[in-house]
Length: 267
Ligand SMILES: C[S@@+](CC[C@H](N)C(=O)[O-])C[C@H]1O[C@@H](n2cnc3c(N)ncnc32)[C@H](O)[C@@H]1O
Image 1 (cartoon, rainbow, N blue to C red):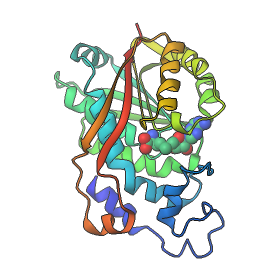
Image 2 (image 1 turned 30 degrees about the vertical axis):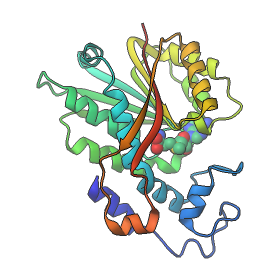
Image 3 (image 1 turned 90 degrees about the vertical axis):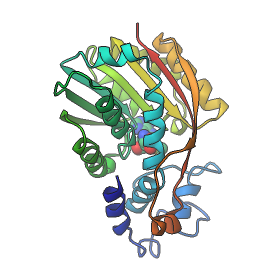
């Protein structure tokens, strides 16, 4: 990940701010604009290229660590069952730069014991097509250290419509990181019902997000709608990623995990 973050860092464009027409109100710099979009009812959007780069630099390692740490809580028999499939089908909801898929690949790779070269088919549903290029590079970076045959697909859509467009039972692992906190006006039980329709028996649902009562309750509703019994826990502690000092100074990345995650198996 070091080379990847260095590449993104070298592409930061300090001139973008001067004439930027999409600043978060009252923000004073690109970094501040990216951070302050989450507060005071500001509009959240990833259409700005600087925002996407800063998002990745600030959160990619820590969100990857949170997702991987959550997946490690799966019982071993569940992951070994997933690894029995010829083709492990993974669906990411609101994957953005691909932090969740990075974690999935690393987690599956560390769980393989049969020496077999597995195929992993990954689909991202994301409303923002402008993430595609970065997500492609991030998945490539993760895949470089894993012995998988990888197939990548993307559905550019709102999550509800995207799930509707999936026909039949398709997925063995559905992962969703920091999307639920960005959704409004959604019927979360209905979202769970749609997930139920596209998950195989034995498939895993994992949702990771910021620790906030309303978000927790919405996630519980999703599991209820999906009729999946859930376990929940928190991620804390250092993400064990150490940034170069110039990246720390410029974008103030997050070092510590701080999320709640919810995990269950579709029986
Ligand atoms: C906070 S980012 C999370 C990115 C990544 N999963 C992570 O953990 O860092 C939220 C992502 O959800 C996407 N998104 C927001 N609203 C969405 C919606 N209604 N349907 C699908 N994707 C959405 C955004 O484009 C963005 O990629």
